[in-house]
Amino acid sequence: MPSDETPSLLALEYEQLKEEQRLRIGTRDNLVYATIGALALIVGAVIQSGSTVFLLLAPPVCVTLGWTYLANDDRITAIGVYVGNVLGPELSRLSSAETELFAWERRHRESGGRPLRKACQLLVDLLLFCGTAVAALVTTWCGPGVSPPLHLTMAVELAVVGALAARFITLVR
Image (cartoon, rainbow, N blue to C red; front, top):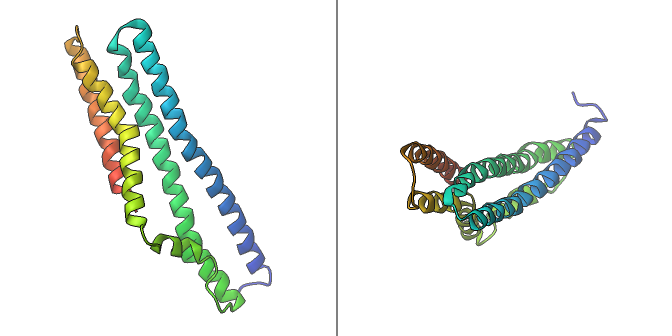
């Protein structure tokens, strides 16, 4: 049997979850800028040195930041689902509310145009985190003086980038 404090505790849980979600959104969005900045530094090193071998830094950078982006995005979504499917209904039940609490957590996913927005975001994410890494690998592969051990390194990097791309695609919600 719930106590009189249960609704207050659930409201506090909601506030804490939304704060975590806000922080994760900020972190996730800043990872885009961090990736662009890191890629700019890598391109600068290539231009300054005249060697494309520095481009081999792009795949690990893109995979690391892309994976972190995905991890934050997954937690952001999980918080929204929990608030909409568990916390809101429980608070509604305890308060005998006539209306659905935290309806936004569900309803914004039902809005028109969402599939197109999700497809565009997937395209942008794939281009930034995977496309740039593949472009760097192709540029290096086609460059002069690439040794067989370097080809092996590039093949491994390409496989890891492919795994990241697959993860982006499977997490589209």
